[in-house]
Amino acid sequence: MHSVSHSRQSIHQLSTQLANQIAAGEVVERPASVIKELLENSLDAGATQIDIDIQAGGTQLIRIRDNGFGIPQDELALALSPHATSKIRSLDDLIHIESMGFRGEALASIASVSELILTSHYQDMAWSIKYKEGEFDLTPASHPQGTTVEVNNLFHNTPARRKFLKADRTEYRHVEDVVKRIALARFDVAFNFKHNQRQVFSLPVATSDENKLQRLTRLINKEFIQAAVHLNFENAGLKLSGWLATGEYSRSQSDMQYFFVNGRMIRDKVITHAVRQAFQETLFPGRFPVYVLHLEMDAEQVDVNVHPTKHEVRFRQGRLIHDFLFYSLREALAQEVGDKSGDSFKVAGKGFNAHTYSTSFNSSGFPSQHTHVSEASAAYSSLPYQNLTNNEDISKPLGLAIAKLKNDYLLAENKDGLLVLQLKQAREILVQQQIENSLATQSKLISKPVLIPFNVSIDTNAQSWLNKHETDFQQLGFEFAVLGENEIMVRQVPAMLNATDIKHSVNEYVSYIINNDSDLLPALINMIVNDDFSNSPTDWNTLLRDLEECGLDKFENCYHQISDKDLSSFFKK
Image 1 (cartoon, one colour):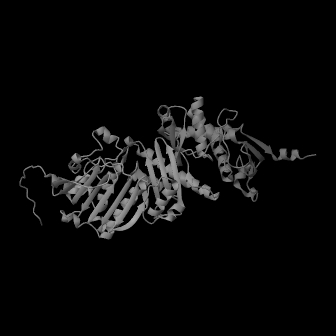
Image 2: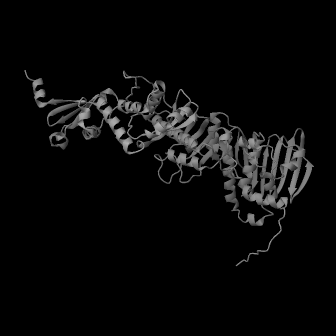
Image 3: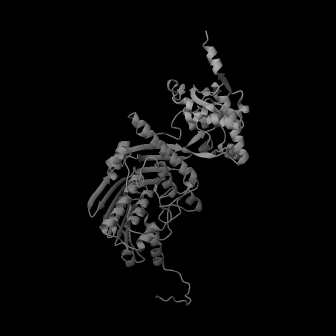
């Protein structure tokens, strides 16, 4: 066993070279991470053409050339120094960072574990600087506009790190993945990629939709394009665009999932969970969706300074991001299913509201509901009358429901004859009684999550309106979130709300409360009662049993009994 010395060691300053090599352990993991850092520097320099040339999977040579701004002669040595950057100057710059790089560690770290040559042309002059073992060698050079960084013999001076590298073929695959991801992030930049002097791909600038699809086909495959939905959702300062393959095209691993935030390729648990939830009903277990998605948002709302590799981010409003992604993806998938049945589709909605809902008001002043079931099919629904006399429900006071007349009446048979129930009036009393009983025994009504969270636009300040009613909404089983100045997101609704179109019902409910300054509870009761009542005979009879349990004395004005004698008199001559 190795013995540890406990004798005191003096405190001393690490050499710059050793400090950079330690820092390189976080930034420079393998050739692919070197290429990522160098490509991001090229993009920050405004490059529109980037050439990548590697040998032996990047272990022997990495050469990145761009046509960006270039670096002045007097800043070349500084560029290779630790914590030197042109991207930020203050903490405020870091909070609003929009560039890919900003830490000032990459070039110094790479130089400390390789033989690095940086050549740059800036304002009609080109210079080359070589860094080796802590020494700078600056000489004039011939070079077109832009910068070339050449990295030779990666980890040559840290053999322990070099031993951790995999076979050249494996390292190449990691490099190829990084180049693909950055090329999918920046369609406005041309990329030329070579490995061992063999052309891997050459991608011209892709500004048109056709050219973007060509790049996607080249970097992913044709099958993805054939199964892909083109998304374009925007709301609450968030914009989601890109391509999403439907459940028909999936993978056994998550190797074709490309997600970018403000052009930065990232991995994030919030995003992964939102995508997984969106696909939970359309993918078999063990399968992974394929997508290329771009999320754009205010730079201040996302913290990119989480890890030196900058793969991880932290969202300031994680739940908002999650719900926005979940809804957008589910909406796109739902539209694809609907449009495929009509043989048309390719672009999914421009915002949360993929449909336009009309609003009308009934005689009571409360928004009326719009059924999606035709009069012909639903006006008179009935239960088959076979074996009716053997049903024990006939012996109960309100009997056995046998038909619904439009959405206004329920026809039942009991031991005394026929009974007609006025649905709206009876349901109004019942719902109010059920709510009062629930609130008397528990702090709030039972909620149910909305399958696809949706937004509601309101004519007042969303934050102040929710603050005013938040406690009451929670008590009634609603959960809302502020999306923007005049927008809220609906996450949960009362479990007793069984509307055919919950979006439409809640939109009208919220609009009615605001426009009429109405109490929340009466408006909720009206929303539930005005919705089309079920066409299921099972639900009809459940309603009758609930009325009986609540006490028939409360409903004496809601139903009319027609005796057998009355029925006979109707047909007497």
